[in-house]
Every structure is written in structure tokens, then in C-alpha cells.
Amino acid sequence: MPAETFGLARLDRLRDPVRQVIQPLDAPHPAYVLFVSISDGDRRASVATVGADSFDAAWQKALSAAGDLLDSQRLDGRLLRIDWPVRIEKITVKTLHKQLGRTKRNYFRLGLSLNDQFETAFLDNELNANAMLYGGNKVEHCVLNERNFALYAKTRFGNAFETDFAEARALWAFTTSGFFLDEEGRHYRLCGEGAGSGQREGQPLDRATLDRLIDSSSSYLASQVKPDGAFVYGYHPCFDREIRTYNVLRHASTTYAMIEAYEVTRDSKTRAAIERSLGQLTGHLTRIARLPDGAEAAFLIDVGSEIKLGGNAVFLLALAKYTSVMSDDRYLPLMDKLATGIVHMQDAKTGEFRHVLLYPDLSTKAEFRTVYYDGEAAFALMRLYALTRDIRWISAVEKAFEHFLRRNYTQYHDHWLGYCANELTLFRPEERYFRFCVENVSTYLDFVANRITTFPTLLELMMATRQALSRIADHPDLVPLLGEIDLAAFEVALEKRAHYLLNGHFYPEVAMFMRNPRRIMASFYIRHHAFRVRIDDVEHYLSGLIAYRAYLNEKEAFKSLVSRQGGAGS
Image (tube, rainbow, N blue to C red):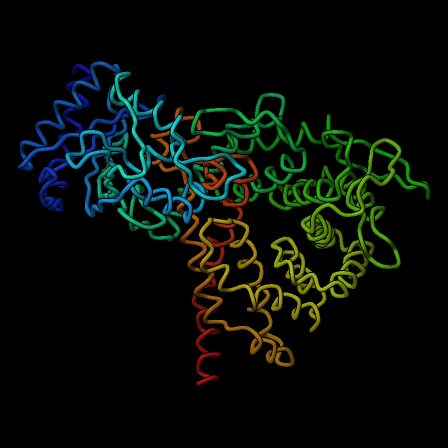
């Protein structure tokens, strides 16, 4: 079957699903307007817009336009979308500027038509994927980027297309509904409004969905590990630009997340990628140094000969997780040296950590860089203690917590500190440590529930804290602590944040509008950073979803705890 015929036959499978739900538009617009988007996954989707006074006429026009695209672009039509306007509002360019100024960068969720007949109209996916409303990473809100707008408009409508953005000019902003047909022939209804606009709707966050997301996103990370064990660090997908900088700390922390995923998937390609990544870390990026007391310490060396406290920590975390998941003790001696390096960076009296040293003289470059390093270091030492029960490591953590408590580290609401505190309470179930867990989130629940960005580390924070909260109930003398946090609000925030993460997944129906869809499909992105896909971005989504998957086994027990608090307070 010729490619064009094959593509049109696939598209026509959407005729009846669309007919059943589409509603005619009011005059002066055509009664039926259809956007047809087509990609084979290797190039940005080609889009055509048609309009007619009847659905059948509009559909025939859509088939004709699709046939032209399939033929002229030499497409098979593997990825197909049909969208149509639902709610339309006439505005001026001046009004648009005001709306954009109130909208977070890349979060504009409306399509725009330059005339009431929708002859020159753009889906919100097109506007965002082509940076038509992007003013650069220093501008926090959306901006009408006339240059990018003109470039893409000429691609859609020909070089003769002229843009006119005089303030009084009329525009038509619209929401859409739609359907997507994937490569396997499955069709999905698309969300029309809100955070999930333009992607499949109604995805339950059940085990099957989580398994698919964990498998696909960990496979994505595995595919980014090169033969030498280094990662492709990331992409700016709007224009398929590779991120050329590197961060060894994030290399190590991403490897940790991949090992977490392998524990779920047992995928052989992920296992091979993990081995290559660890080979790069152990063989090329780690150095052994003799400390003043004669002990040997290992340090992970980052760009600029920096020894980052967090780098040593997440490398230790990765090796500890590897040891546990693979039942392989080969890295125990190296872990001991990495932990020795971490303790070397700690003040023995105050418990405070130095954050950055320089190799090879181990001089201090930065006393403090980011609060993340503190939580990472303490968490890593706890994980090593859990493996070896060496008192040195938990003693260092307890010293660190004296510092955290003195300096009120709960003000940071940091997920690494959440992980660390939860882990510490497993072995030291003391009131002050459990209180830290509670205070780390108790005043933060509105933020977690309502943050507009996906902010994946918030789910990690909630999942670690949830474990600690559940264990408080096992200690009668500590139960009053639960009265210091609204468990019902906590549960709502946790669920909202977990489900919200799906809005950062590069489903094919979203990825198809990027310059090279296949490159980033099944990854996760950060929308306000121009849909950036970086290995550590994917890592944090992955870790949060893996933790939520584990939570499914304990969900009913936690709901019971929430209900008991509600009953006690009624």
C-alpha cells in the first residue's frame, strides 16, 4: 500500500470518534474547523487547517490536506492528530500582550488565529514548540516573539506570509479538543484545557500506567549512556539543540535513579547502561587521596577539578543502591573511601559540611553552595550505614543533624533532607528527628498542591515524608506529632503532585511538535525552561514515580491513618 494511502486510511479511523463529540461553531467562524497534524517521529509535525459548513465537508478537506502533506513531505503518517476549536474569544494584540505578561514562560495554553475563518491559525502546541511566545530564559513570562512567529508562519503558510501585530489588530484565542492516533493504531482523546492541554486525558496513575512510564523513561535514560559510559547530557527540544555542558554529580545521581528503575523493570539494556555509567565514574572520574590523618579517601572529580560534597554523596548513593539491588559487594571498599571523603568535609565539632574542595590539594573552594549537598551527604551516609552498620557513618549523620536543627533547615523544605530524615528515623526513632520530617512539609502543603510547574522533587519530598508519618503512628509516645500536620491536606497534596507529573511527560502527541520528536519521546521535560530535557530532570520524575509505585501497596493503610486523624478532630 502506498504511504499516502496508508496514512489516509489511518487518519480516517478517527472520523467517527471525532464526529461523535465535535460541536459546530457559531458564525462568523466556519461551523467545523479541523487541524490535521502529521509526523513520522523524525521531524516536526506538519500541520494543516481546514474549515467547512458541514462535518463531512470538513472531513473531506482534512483528508485532502493530509494527502498533500503526506505526499509533499514524504510521510507515512505514523503519528496523527486531529484538533478542533471549542471556545473562541476575540481579543486584540494589546490584550494578548497583557495576557502573556501575566502567564508564566511557556505556560500559555491557547491557540491563536489571525482571522475569524481560521485560515491562519496555530495550535498552542505549535506556539510553544516553536518558541513563538518565548522571550528567553531571563524573561519569566510569555512574550510575543515576532521573529520566531514569522519564521514558523512562513513555514506553514509560505514566504509571502506577512505578520502584523499592531496593538489594535484583532486575534482569536481558542481552546481545543482532539484525538491522537499512535503508531500502534490506538487512539486517545486529548485534553482541551488546563495543565494537560494537548495530551491524552484520563490517564489513571495505577500500577500499569506507572510501569509504562518507569519502563519508557528509564529506557530513555539508558539510551543516553554512550559506549564510554558518559551521558548525552540533555537537549533543548524546540530546536533539537544538544546541551554541551556536563555535570558529573548529575551523572552519578541519574545512575542512582536508573538503578532504582532497574529494580522495577529488570531490563537488560538498562542494566548494561548502568554498568557503563558506573565504569565511567569508577574508572575515569574518581581519585584516591591521602588525608592528613593517613586515611585514604575517594573523591568524585567534577568539571573544573571540583570535589562537590553532593557529588561524592550521590555517587555513594548509586553504589549503595547497586549493592543492594544487584546483591554484589564489589564496591564496598570504594564506598568506604567515598564516605571517608564526605566525613573529611565535615566539621567534627559543629557537624557542618564544607561544600566544594579543589583537587588535588583538597583546599576549600566554597564553604557553601546549595542546601541540596547537605541532605545528599547525610542521606548517602545513612544508606551506607544500612548496609554495613559501621557506627562512623550514623555518627556523622547525627552530628550533621545537630547543625540542621540549629540552623532550622526545615525552612528549605528540601527533598534530600526529607529522604535523610526519614532514613535516620529508621535507626534512631527520636522525637526530634520525626519532628524534623513533619516540619519539613507541614507549612508547605499548599505550595506542593498548587505549584504551576511540575517540580518533580516535590513528589520525592512527599513520598519520603509519608514513610516517616506512617511510622510515627507505630510509636504511641510520638503520635501527638501527627496533630501538628494536616494529614488530609497532606494526602491531597501528595496525590495532586503525583498526577501533575504526567503533564511533564513527552507523550508522542506532544513530542511530535518538536524538531526531532524521536530524540526526546518518552522522556520528561521542564516546561518553563523551554521544555528542556536533561538527564537529572528525567531522574527526578523517575524517582518520584518509583516511590509512588511503592506507595500503592501502603495507600490504604495511609488513608486509614488520615481517616483516624479526621475522626479524632471531628
